[in-house]
Image (tube, rainbow, N blue to C red; front, side):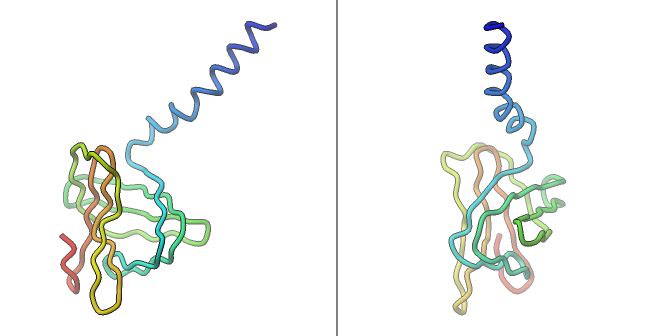
Length: 116
């Protein structure tokens, strides 16, 4: 009985890591203030970020408990030393120009604000 309980404890302990490894194209971020991504407004809060596609043809979806928004992006694969949200300010607006993750950088932009 003890061996079985120990085995179940190990399986349940490793599940979060296995789920995280399987979701290579997703991340969780916290936005401390309202930002604009391309032409989309995102209020501050916690978001799950999921991307599909590669290179310049990617789509990134920001999901919170309130809504879900999808924006175009460029994916640049490569190792980063630190994770960060990259922002730029213009006309009292904060633009999210990129998200630097462990193994990739997501870059955003639109025709009104050069985020690349």
